[in-house]
Length: 206
View 1 (cartoon, rainbow, N blue to C red):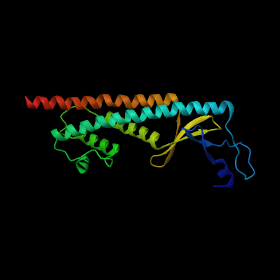
View 2: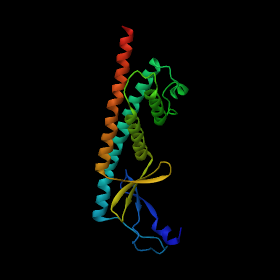
View 3: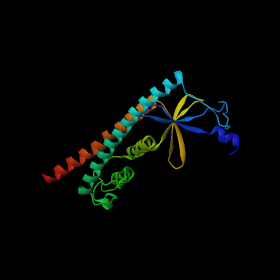
């Protein structure tokens, strides 16, 4: 990487308020300071723009985490009920209880195994649901482990995160709302599976 490119890639960690922090990508055309780095200050209307977005972002980020936790609990219920009605080895067996070592991805892999197994009592194709839950986990990880970036050149916000390498995704309030709704909707069919396990169990007890 050339010295010019290094200057262009310069980022600064800027505290926006006492509660929020954001990485600022310095515009490429910003003037150089005495040390040879781009000098860039956010102030006035642009500062207000960034502050207002940060407040909304962290509020919606909390919703992403909340609905993801609900989905994870719903999947746990399916796993517990499946273990009582199906003879199938799962990662769940290695942990015995839902410990921190039993990750959301582990649970998704068990859910996938359950719904693909020939002994699965519900005769319905859940291929699309499995794919969408995996996407939901990726969305959750993006927000929980990613870094919020404001690009001063574009006046846009991005999340920089690692998923099979470094990635960057544009984010705005509408995108976040859609992702919250996407994850919320995944709980509906998962609960239907859980309820069906309950129905089958009660039928067998008659």
